[in-house]
Image (cartoon, rainbow, N blue to C red; front, side, top):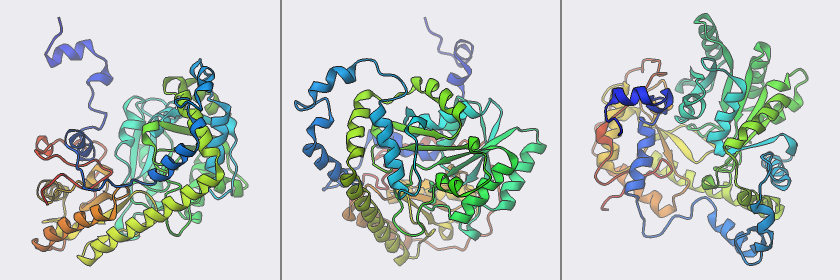
Length: 468
């Protein structure tokens, strides 16, 4: 007979089970919950990133899957137990794809490819390999809200935001990085490394060459790790080009490569999050060995490996796919951001990712995070758009919001712009006061009213079901 009391559960369950460290109580995740219960449907379904291209390839390559009459002959070989190192052809194809995305300027060793269950699993895996509970990683903010879950929840690793500001387009500065590092050390925190998302989620920007070089020098001088999350590396649609940390260390003479690690996946660059393909690529032999042992807790199915090995090995298709995907992303980004600019809403200049960073500071009643959340509720309730507030990304300035645009067609973009135009037209625009900096490490926002009758969309689409 089970106990219904919280005290009873506290005694019966693990600390992880009863903790609130999953970071799920954040407005960022509310769109997921509400979308599942009440998704928006347009008259014409958006074509996503480039699903039509992949669907066409599948039709033309039926032997790529064991689930077709042409490919079923491979069933036995794929269905039996597979080594958790991964299928050799899969690791080779992943390495080739990573090289192609980086313009063939750097090569990758298939024997250093470690599998994980999506980028979430890859991020957690690398933390388990590099840090102990209580150790810390520096993370430039604003940063992806789920890092709090992926990197900290089960590992016990702390994330220390390095606050960046709009005055220099949220670029991380040497001063801010050094201050965050020194403050942590003085507080008795063992800083094990620096985590970079390049290109950035939520900013949609990528690090320039010299900037990345300076960050590599920073970790190298202190002999701490550098984990580069490069899952948006193929989503760059305008200058500057993406530069991988793999390219940077290739050009630098004195770098301890044992400190360099890359997290990658196919969720963004290929638009395949449901396949749960995450990759850790480390230059550290011990990390590769440990990572492979740990990957047995989150393997990619051999059926998925076989299919992707065939898909990614088709260089003609991959070249076509990446070029078309970049073209479509750029076009949708242009339509949406220029449409916002026409109604007086500015966005951070960006060139990558599936989203942009929208500046709604002029619409705040005051420059505070309380005002930001009030505006966010109005946008969800009245405008019927789901955008993610900057506070959920640990942004130090109130009034910034992330908007995803990648899986919308032009018609859907126009509907979103129409709603925003109507909303802005009826509001008094107020110039905000200077935002106060605020430590957001313990930010846990909970609003029972956020699950609305009509629901809201996933973070990957701004539209809420509404009568238009």
